[in-house]
View (cartoon, rainbow over the protein chains, first blue to last red):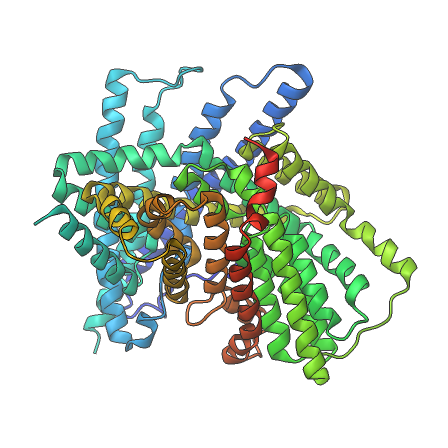
Length: 183
Length: 434
């Protein structure tokens, strides 16, 4: 299994410009990301338990768990959205690194700052649009086909999941920008 | 500016963002979003972002991914990789190069319960590399063989790459899984032949191991009984229509969990490790799929795939030559890009061309997997090599890369065989019927 390494520096010694704000932001970003990733983990276990219960229900008692497929789909949102930030901290998102690793450190920091900034823009847009979309679904009262589960809480969950990743990216942006201006 | 020009600029910007080491899924989402906003309208683009993300994250067909990843992670945490290796060792151990052969057979066995190359290489590397070191095997052969054989993880079902390919191309995941079985066995045999040849040429590379009696060999087979039962239940259930792919993955994960608990090999920390690993890998895959879908919407608006398909089918070249060029493109792309990123980026563009040329989509899936297997072991990005480097820290990276070359040759031979004998891939899906 892949090596787990954290690229987010949260100790004062490691921060280029020791600052209480950066250290606190780092700790906040890491702990929120970790907590929501536990929810994602619980989502995987729930998905497994529900599917097995559904199979046993179908094969042995001819009675499936009502709405199992819908609920598993909704759990899919929990598993992916709530894991985005912590996966980022673990450097789990696939990227092509061979080119930037050849560059001097300062260049690397500059590119990193730019990449984090683009990431922040992306997730702010996603949070905003998911909030608007959730609001539309809430107002129109859209629900799932069989169990009539409302869609909007899950769309709001996607909007909420953008907060930890934005914090992580903001921290990375500040740290990288500081490394660029550092003499 | 014409939509085609915008599309080409979009692809160039996307490749540039990859070079800047932006996460591939983020980059595809961002560039796809901007391109769609430009070509259609900002309102349509932004609305598409929220709707696409919600649809993909909540897609039932994608939940097959966490279940099969959980199955592999729990199998590893339950010590199944060690038992599969021990059984292979009992069979091949006393031969010259036997430990490498055992590792290759072990990788093929573990690939039957795990759908990722890096997880298969890591699981088997942790068990096999210390043994090969103990018997003074050549570092290059030892590390290169595990890195290469780990790539069987995506060819022998279950396979994350087949799942993503199936979702992107609307092909049956069950048929794709079946199509990987015979090519997987062929490739594992070719890898073993490579070892036989290398050891025949330079016996000092790999000394003989200890002799195992036939009684012990038979006894050792019990070690893989659980793996065989689990594989048969999961794949058999899938092909006989007992389970959907997602349910088959869940049965596999529950089975691996049960085996770990009954054997008392799986403790709480092993379980949390498996769940954490599953969450991380699932997020990694689904974020890339999301990016590919959004980028695919942008590319569809540019009409590049249709124009490209028309243009390629009008070229004065035989379709096999065009397929050769496509394979070459994947091979070169694989040097620099991760397998999943490569597939999700190119399939929406290349797939219509493949259909227009009249190739079997299931067979093409196998070819794509084989070529991306080369990508996971070739420099500079070969992920499996870095996984093995993480386990064998004292072995220089170039030694591992040197070790993979004979196996790369076997992969190329496998692609050539598959091109001339596509039935190896299509035979099982064909007899399975619709």
